[in-house]
Image (cartoon, rainbow over all chains, first blue to last red; front, side, top):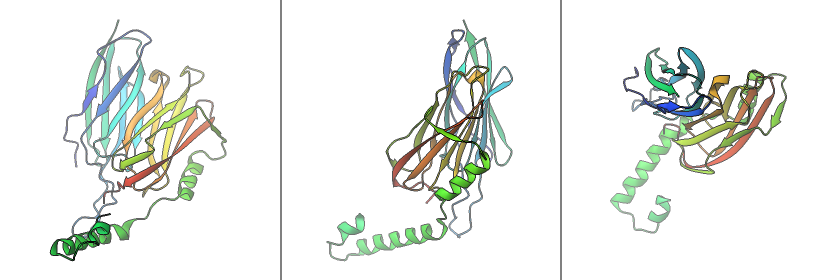
Length: 109
Length: 157
């Protein structure tokens, strides 16, 4: 399953220099564990988002490697220390190799 | 629970159907429950952290004591660290000893993270221990373990 949904990201629009801001993300995905069997008894192949990465001005600062134990529609929250204004890029990558991206701007006053 | 209550009632069509349904459900679940064990978690940890000593403290693993729905259990990790050039948290690995596969998530932090803390939601197939191990930039390891009781398992059943 390709990642079809538009991810949701919550980032504060502004921060003071040196402030640690919390970022919350959510994306819709089955996160098929590969443990289930379909009605005919055949195993349903694994299909999960295995990597999530957050970058600021092109430089990655947080990575999550998800395994099958992560719930469907994975939620992830984490932190970032604001220094300068710029743009976040968030990337989700699934087993099929599809990528979904989202961006958000941060202004440091 | 249901069958217990039903046992006091006269056998009816409804009851027969319910029992048949439960039996079918159990049949679906039974054959594929090959769950990870504590030994498997230990093996996995040995592979990742061979030869390093494990300390207690510094890392806080926050999870509910009882999870009503094993499909979505909140998990929050918080590691004490100044997150400076010289001293920061490199990664956090999370394991579960009662899920089909022991690995849950691996976080990689950097100094830009400001704070080695993250929250997500995980599946728990049954009542089990969840273990988090933090690896510091110095190579030192810290671990935390919590037991979560699960009322309804979440392994896709």
